[in-house]
Length: 336
Image (cartoon, one colour):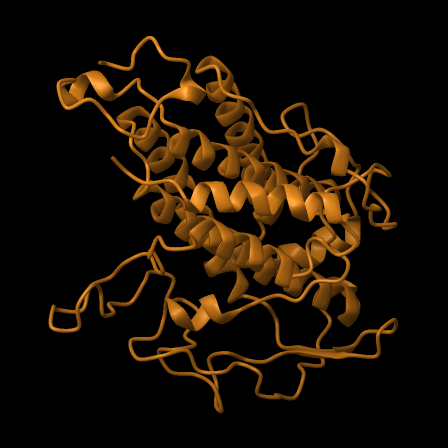
């Protein structure tokens, strides 16, 4: 029996073979719903963190309202690229449209949308320009995973990037080293977040059944790739410096990535397009690809990466339970 008349959330994962493929595009399975709900949650999380970045260093307008900007922090970001405020604004708007669209699509199919409003309990930054409202994410105690930097540049592996290099004594625009270090960290964090989405969308796309849902996942995922390539380019412009955090006492160092003991293709800052690498089978020729794209455990992997980066420091056990449930259900989805 064809499934057109079944409620979206009740559709079986077994598709009637008598239904032609082109007629299945509007059928949405339980697995499709689970994938879209997890993606909606990740987009809500990204919207929350990007909103915070935009309040301080982006463009506050009718498209992305909230906050009033931080002049010195914005200048420090502009050391990486003069268009950083515009890029931050546009990335924020993109994430907002993604979560709004996915939730609206779920509702149109009779499925339950995702709301994380009960978990907006984390404090805002006290920096000038930030709104004092509840947040989903913490941006004040980050551990930024930068392995993406060499993953996309290296043909052979992921060398470490923690070599200590003496700082550049210059202070462009009279910005303190601490402010510049915060901006540099943000520049790398932008790329860290967006490389996650760059992989997540093709990973879960392999589990989608509906052609329409597949179109959604591929179309939204393409914008994540655009974001990542932009931020990969800008992160490489971070000026060389070393600074001690006055709160934690930790030393943060940004080396010259183009000079010894670093340098070479693995660290070259203008290599922003993926270098060829092994794909599917090492007996096949090297190929330039998005990586990783293996689908097993993709949703839980994304959640663990968010958590390891410190985004959820201070969140409640209920939040983690809710997010783990969404991730498990998405990873259980099977393409039919």
